[in-house]
Image 1 (cartoon, rainbow, N blue to C red):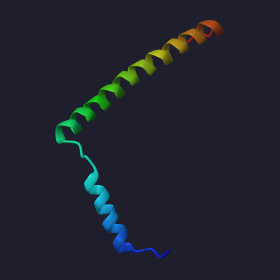
Image 2 (image 1 turned 90 degrees about the vertical axis):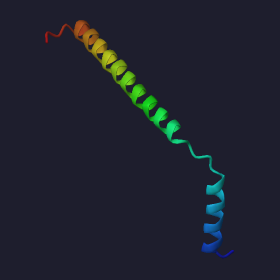
Image 3 (image 1 turned 60 degrees about the vertical axis):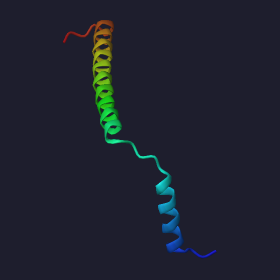
Image 4 (image 1 turned 120 degrees about the horizontal axis):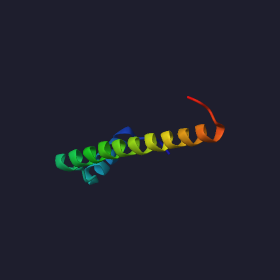
Length: 64
């Protein structure tokens, strides 16, 4: 079976036409949601890390 670049590009264009692209508003909202989740995750992991550090320091009796 031979590869036909012209047919391939035609199929790619056909499939691209079927894609439902997000609106500008949807893109902005999704981007903001990602930044908020990154901030929340950062605070959570920082807090968890500090609590684990305090617990380990207490258990091992290490003076900081």
